[in-house]
Length: 163
Image (cartoon, rainbow, N blue to C red):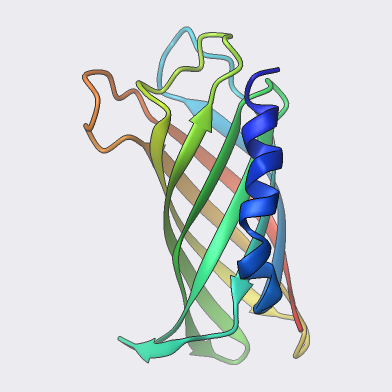
């Protein structure tokens, strides 16, 4: 399985993020590939986010890293900015922009190249000071950096632990 090796390597690459991590996010969801020949599949995602580094545009911004593994064998690893906008009454909006590496399993899930950008937007609820739940939609695409750009969309349920 070609994509699994980069995903494991990414865990090591995320070690510096983990050292200053303020949040661990675990999600389960489902990917819908735009290409009609692709194999849609469930996904497990693991994210580490640093403690907030700056406050801008009403959000607390941090650096986050993500590792996603799909049941079809595809994998994505990325790193980039992540923001959380408080809405009051323990509700919040979360968003991130994480460029990275996508390895397809060879089952027609190629997205036009190894370089992909995953954008995410979600809404969540803080159950306690350390635990929150959210529902997020994400999109993965190479942003037309390759001649082929079918893209993929996912919907996921996420649990965030702050420490």
